Length: 321
Length: 295
Image (cartoon, rainbow over all chains, first blue to last red; front, side, top):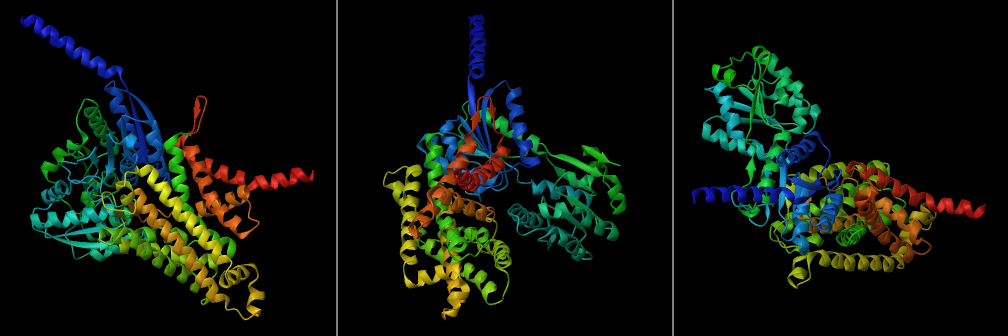
């Protein structure tokens, strides 16, 4: 009896596996703009599903940064009658959410988003844990708490942290709000400096000299574009510089905990697989990036007079010497 | 092209058509190339979105958006007429200022309208599905506006505006103040562009500071394509040509999005090129026709 049962289980598992593999799923992609990070998301997503032997037929669209086109793509997707819609970046996800609301044909199609900083603020989901409707996805919001904990390992006595950002970037505004909340919990002060153009970054960094013990740069496009000028100010004044993205470490920041968008796409792919296997999107919590990589620049640490704790040295995934 | 893509293009053609009518007013009637529109479209969207999320009636928010658009147009026209700044530069100055102003209005670059009541909701709750309600409503609004513009053009003020664009020297010698006519015209144009922006935001579920990028390109392309296809011999014809041009322009984009030739299909990144080629074709067709007929 036991043997028959186990045989039956094996057959059933095999059957369900082949069933899952036999079906070819249709996925319509609405990506907002061609951009290395967003392209990597799509690549990671596709690679993951391929590795899982899930057959997918893709309809890939790119709005080339134009909202009107993103909207037209969203409407076109109704004709493709996909099993899942993947929206990459906020404007595309909003356009898709609206198209789903409008077209009866898309009413029951799951919408999966990726590379979205603030899904609640963007009106896509009501609650990160219970998204509701047929929408869920992976958010690229930085785990600010973990970033600041890392800074605290370097500087247990941190009193004043400088933050440079562009107040015109939605992403940065959200991050700075979180930095304030976290700083309150961890017991230090935040000094803000803003730059609306890359040419203003140097001035903003200089303005923090003497007012802060360390500087943290969130993933702000404007400031990151001109991070060399911040590095220069930090070296001259022996202020340690930390960043929210790992690429900035290669460019002269002491350390950062970041993720790459390829992994972000893979994580989104894993979510798509779970939905194909029967998970209900509206009850699948929105995820943030799981795998964080710690990058460390010892040369920069030396120039900025930073002592690197043993703990950090051991944990680092990549060290620039 | 498939059904939803077709209906979607018609809907976009109508809602952007209101913007195209505004561009027609400045570009063709006043002979005033106005880049303010890249800023006044998101201005209308911002005003409407912020008003709605603060509890203002969605229909009333359209009026607020139009008022703001009118002011933006006035600023450009005043910079040009009273401060003697070249019209292109004047409009660029207003446009870039509006980028900052729009972020101020929205307190950030994006305001979501997903899940709040818009002008579409009363119709959807009547049982008309959203994908049909939107083109019908936008069709009614844009056709009504076209008719209003035609009526306006036959009034004394409208005729003066036409003359101002045609021959400003002649009209000044007749004692007309061309400055106030230009201020009124550019204001009206941007009021329409802002209305279009407000409707677009309500339709697509969000206002975004970058949603105006390329508005003037779409506007001019639509005006020109419309003239080529539908003609511009009389005022009513030219006004409807602008609206039809907008629909053709959006249909062309929908076509480009879904284009497949045998085993060859276009990459998403080819879209801008295809759009440009379509516009160039419609621009050159009338000239080619003329040359062929002469031969």
